[in-house]
Length: 571
Ligand SMILES: C[S@@+](CC[C@H](N)C(=O)[O-])C[C@H]1O[C@@H](n2cnc3c(N)ncnc32)[C@H](O)[C@@H]1O
Image (cartoon, rainbow, N blue to C red; front, side, top):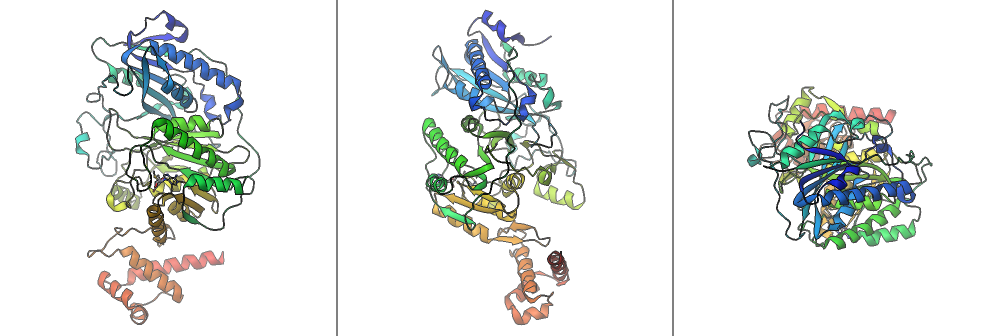
């Protein structure tokens, strides 16, 4: 027997108001619309459907008591408009307070046209008399846990809490705002999977509590166009890679005036999140309406500086990403709401792990999607501890899975040794993936919130051109110095050499010595003996003698490098 009631949208009129603790609204989900990247501005059916669903949500919220919870299940493209409406909605002196966008990860859709869709959304709102001091509510997060799994390579618990031992509970890991429901295929998820309803029920149940699940009756479908097919127009890029100190809004206004057809192939934006972070030259604490208005201003400008067909990727927490998506849905082609499942500092009731990477393309040109170059990622059964990853890869233990629009394999930067003095630096791998997925070698990338230069570093490593700008001259300096520290590994792969990388026993990074030796050999056009160095580079000679028992290893890797390069030259 079901532990909750169910009804259809036409039956809710008969329900008494303010009588329920939890209401779940299953909005009309047509999984075929996952592929829809049309700009719905002029689409009357789309707008009519949003209006009809908002009316249903108003009725549904009336059924909740003060302190009750409203869950709304739907397509990532539709939910932002509903969320923006719910944020502004008030009813009999009650408001709805946004709590979470829970991403429900389902079995991925395999498609060669686009980044496979692998999640649907579940908004969670609190009904409260006051937004300033919200009515308290409880979730049973101590008893509802996710069973641990162990990494098949190292045997440790797969989720690495980075030393946060207080999160280790014998029942399992804490529930976050990304739920895996991998036994349900996304094309079969027209209504919310039963396991999710059960979890909502378990999380919210208390003696005498009542939960209702409302199924929205079918709404008219609208034709799903297949995106733009126009040719790739020629962009007019700036002449060289650049790290600029500028207010990016002014800079983009200037670009838009100078290049009315747009010029960048990809714009990536990681703005301040209005979370009172400690930046040098920017106050990260604005009134919500001011922050949203400022974001809409730079989003509009970014759309202008992109070439037709160019990609836009915007990173933010779901609370703000819904506003960005609602703004962009009426101007750009929606491709994916990418869920970056990256555990953050524990706070609130569910662990915050869901960062939104909104992926759009500009209408009027052919977009680039190099899915085949990044389509495989490490299997989720492994942990992400660097030592385990390196060890298992060396031994050939390297199972892969398809990349979808839920990214679980990239951690936020956890160790101080891997970051610069910047409060919100992103991992280079994240930017490399975005860049390699949405551009081709030689394409131009722009980042208006450049920070410590992660986008520029990733672009350089991936062979793309870039302009980044930041309002803070100190971050500009940090970004420039990071770019100067990009070095080349033996296999030709470029990396950022940090002082802490592979130190030998007395603190000298071996990689630096290797690179210095290789570049000297390259300059001389042959693999040098240690005695050759004695004459030409005494410092390097001393460092090698100090840190290497013999020079055989250095000679071997250098020979391989020189051979590779000669081979490439002759191709
Ligand atoms: C979240 S951080 C970006 C971090 C960056 N992605 C990285 O990995 O280092 C946001 C950045 O936006 C910058 N910023 C804020 N307002 C700006 C503006 N109007 N123009 C340019 N940069 C701005 C801040 O100084 C800060 O460095």
